[in-house]
Amino acid sequence: MEEGKARLEIVCTNCPASQHPGISQHDFSNGFCRSEPKSPLARKAASKVSVTLLVLPGEVQLVLVNHCNYGVWPGVLGSVGHNSPEGGGFHLGIGQEAVLAVPSGWSGRIWGRQGCCFDEKGKGSCDSGDCGGLLRCNGTGGTPPATVVEMTLGTHRSPLHYYDVSLVEGFNLPVTIAPVGGGKGCGGVAGCLVDLNACCPSRFEVKQKGKVVGCKSACLALKTDKYCCTGEYGSPERCKPTLFSHLFKSICPRAYSFAYDSSSTLNMCRASRLAHRLENDSAMLLLPASLLLPFADSFHFSSMYSSTFRSGSRDS
Image 1 (spheres, rainbow, N blue to C red):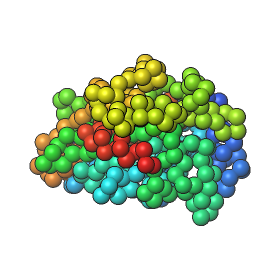
Image 2: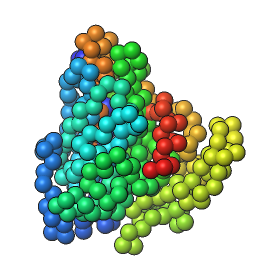
Image 3: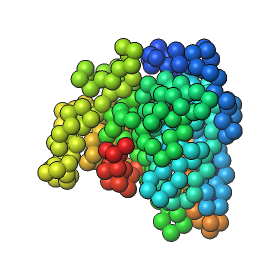
Image 4: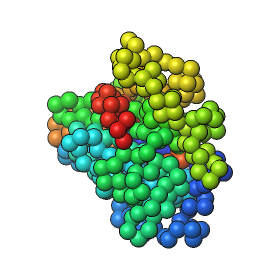
C-alpha cells in the first residue's frame, strides 16, 4: 500500500438468496417494486474486487460494494455534529459499488437493510433495518434488530481510526470489515461471519412473511436493566455477560455482543504520516466491499466513542 493511500474494506460473501427469505420477492428485477433509478454514485463493480482509492486532503472515501446476488439498501447515520452522506440511504444493485466522501474525524454508523420496496417519492418499507419507511434515512437510525458498523475516523492531530461491528442492537445480516493499509499495527478483519438468524432463540426472532429476518439482542427482547446495562447495571463492573451474550460471542467473537463487551472487539488503525503531512487528515479508505446487507461477512468499526453509540443507539 502506497503512503498517502489506505482503505478499510468491508466485504460481503455471495450469500444465497435462500438464506435470506423475503429478499427475492422484493428484488427490483422481478417486478414486485418499481425499478429503482440508479444512484448517481453507484456504478457496476467487478465481482469481489478490492477497490483502492486515493485519500483526498481532509477527506476519507467509504466504498460500499454489493457482491450479493440481490439488491441491498445501505443506511448511513452520522453521530451528533456529523453529516449523513447521500441523505443517509440508497440502493445498491447486484455488483454495484458506491463511494461516499466524508471529512476527516467523521464519526458514524452503517447498517444494511434488506427486503425493501420504495415508491417514486422514496417512501416504503424494509423487512429489516428500516429507517422510518424512507429510502434516504435523513438522520434516522435503523430499526433494530440490525447489525451495525461503527467508526470514528482520525485527524492529523489524532491519527487513530477506530472501528467495530456491534450486535448490541441485534442482528439482521452477516457483515465483515477489514482495514487494508494504514501502517503497522492496524487491526484485522472483524464482524460476524455467521447468519445468526439461522440459530436465533425463538423468543428473539423477528419474522416477516413467516421468515426470520432478524435476531434481537437480549436487551431488545427482555428489556431489563440487567440485559441493557442500564440503571444499577450501568457500569462495566455491574453489567456482565449473560447466557445470551455468551451465545452471540461464541458464534461471532469479533463483534460486540453487549454494551460492555471486552476491548478485544475494538479495532484501531493509524493513518500514514505522509498522508498527514499532505493534510490528508483521514488516510483511510472504507471499502464496504459489499455492504449488501445480507453480507455473510464481517464489518468492524471500533468505538473509542463506543459509549456514545451505545447510549444513543437505544434511542434509535
